[in-house]
Length: 448
Image 1 (tube, rainbow, N blue to C red):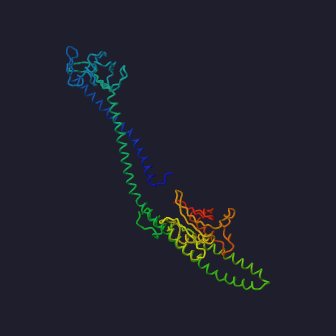
Image 2 (image 1 turned 120 degrees about the vertical axis):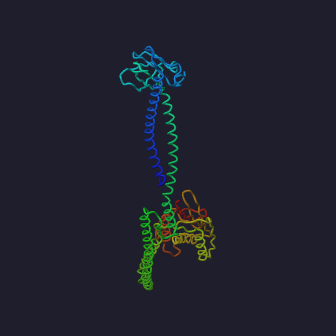
Image 3 (image 1 turned 30 degrees about the horizontal axis):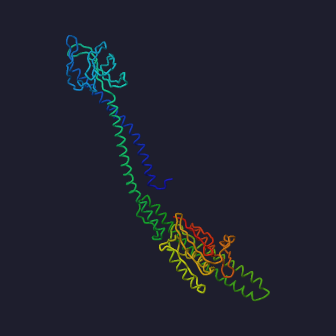
C-alpha cells in the first residue's frame, strides 16, 4: 500500500497520461497515414499528367519521347514506374524503371476516368497504382490507359519511421510531463508539509496550536485540531485539579479513621477490631493512591513530550544516594548523552523513581542503568545485585497491592503504577535476571 499522497497522485497522473497517450498514438498514426496516402495519390496523379503531356499520336500510333520530362521515369532503378496500355489492354509503352519489374497489371475500362488502388506482383511486393483513362490525346481521338506505380514499401518505411519517432517523442514528453507534475505537486503539497511541521512542533510541545496561514481548504481541519488541543488541555487541567481536590478531601477522613483505630487499639479487648480497621484503612489508602497516580500520569492525546534521560536519572540517583547513604550504593550509568525519552517529565520521574528506589532498597551494593538502541526501538534496563525475583513471582509483583518485601513499609502500588505508565506510552515492561545477580527491569520502547 502506497502511504505517500504525492506518490499516489503521481502514480494516478502517470497512469492517466499513459492511457491518454496510448489512445492518442493510434489516432495520430491513422491521421498521418491518411495524409500520406492522399499525398502519394496526388503524386501519382501528377506523374500521370507528366506522361500525358509527353505523349503524342501519329498515324494512330502512340509516340513517347526517349527522355521524359519526369527524371524518375528515365532512371532504371527508380521507384517510380509508368505504363501505357491501349483499349484492348495491350502494353504499348513502359518506362525504363519498369523494365526490371514483372508486374501483371490489367487495366479496366469502366468509365470512371481514373482509379487509385493497390496491387501485388508475382514476388509479393505491393504497389500503389493510379490508372487514368484517356479518350482524347493531342487533339485526336485515342483510347489509352496511362498507369503510374509506386512501391508500398516506401510508404511503409515512412510510417514505421513516424511510429518510431512518435514513440520516442511521446516517451520524452511523458518523462517531461512527469517531472513537471512532480514539481507542481511538490509546490501544491507544500501547504501540507507546513501543516505537518506545525503538528510536529505541537507534538514536541513547542507551540500550543496551529496557525491560520494555510490554504482555505485546510482551515476547517486546522480549526478542528486547535479546538481539540484546547479542549484536551483544559480537560487535563480540570482533571488534575479534581484529582488534587479529591486527594486533599480524603486525607482528613483517613487521618481521623487512623486516629480512631489507634485509640481503639489501646484497649486490649478491641485490638482485633482495630487491626481489621487499620487493614481496611491501609487498603483504602493503597487504592486511592494507586488510582490517583494512574490517572494523573496518563499519556496525553496529541502532544508528544521528549525528555532528556540522563539528567533525570542522575538527579534521582543523587537523591537516593542521600536516602540510602548507609549502603554506599555504587551506581553505573551507561546512557548516551543525547538520549531522549518520549514521555512527560512527571511520568518519567514517577516511573524511574519507583524502579530506582526498588533497586536501591533491595540491592547489596550495586545498581546499573543502561540504554541500548536497535532497529526495533530503545531498551532501558535497571539492574541490581540483590536477591532478585523468583520466576513464579514475577507476574504477581506487577499487580497493585502485591509486595515481596515485607520488611519495609509501603503501599505495594509502585510497580503497578510503573507498568500502567509504560503501557500508556505504548512501551512494554519485562522482568528478568541480571548479570549482577539480582533483578533486571527492562522497558522496551517501540521505534516511532
